[in-house]
Image (tube, rainbow, N blue to C red; front, side, top):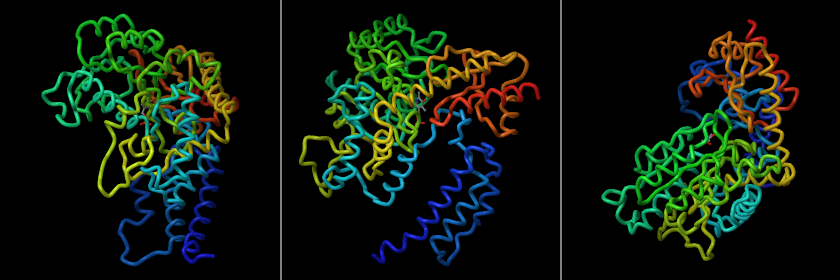
Length: 458
Ligand SMILES: *Cc1c(COP(=O)(O)O)cnc(C)c1O
């Protein structure tokens, strides 16, 4: 037994025990944190000690001090944002990634984890129905996946217009028009800001948040020149999907690059029951999705997919004398994302896919959407409650006749059984439920409906 390894044993065993304690508490603990930042800082101790502390002691202190400030995001009745739980294999694989400590931008240097990420990328393409030649990168999240894809898009549409961004930047070049739907996610706007493209041209959406096709066609006709169109698979309020089969050909007819933000919705393609929502999506030029939402892997893992690998490489590739240059024609892992030093964050995704199998991924997607449908039906039956979106996938927006949404959310919070976030959609205050956790089963849905009934009658 090595001395090197010995040092790790006690803190890792302690971490495993403390992690298990946390996981055991998740289903029944109140979901919201019961302590605030000040209190946690007090418990941790604010001053950096001069003297060393033994590793296991640090881990024990950390877990004990932080526990009251943890929010049970893995709870089957947590519906905030679009979050998702964690499959055991994915969580355990994530621990191995930390233990292995492979800095993984370069395939040749870290062949073990590179192989895992390559296979995970291939499986994702199969499951999501993307073209086989597509380059896949494991990014930190859908926000950065959108940024990477849109960087490739910007450079490529300008290249086609005879402008070299790498050499000349974007100032003085042709204007790049970016057309987005009214209900795109805010991460599209921030990506455009990072990329120096400014605010996009906003195309109105229909009553479910889908981009209006005639208005898109009109806007495309208005002007010629380098153009990017951003579509969406999964509206965070309604769950709606843009009509890819019609929108993508309209955009391509005008020479536009089409990017699809499918942070949680692209996964509909993995299910034979929900695949029709994504019909035509494979004809886009780039896609962004998350593994940490629908696939239920730990934070953080987003996925960027770009049909034209050369365009992706041209935007992201880094050269330096001290880095070994790739001997293969495959793009290095670090050439597909923003990061050079990078965690092999595709490994937990591989583990989730490997433990589920393709049937399991389809069943996961079906289960989330079925739970959302059951939740919507149950809420709609409550007096004074209206589900105001067409529940096509995993998102449910409820409006109330007799109570303010903020008040209902507060009462749910105080009870701690259910967490959902207030929002505002299509002119109405709504309580928004995202069903993203594999653990949200029929019992959790029934509990949720009961909790909302209690909150309304309180
Ligand atoms: C969550 C989400 C994003 C951002 O994803 P992160 O993983 O939080 O960066 C982008 N688009 C849509 C539609 C989303 O639901």
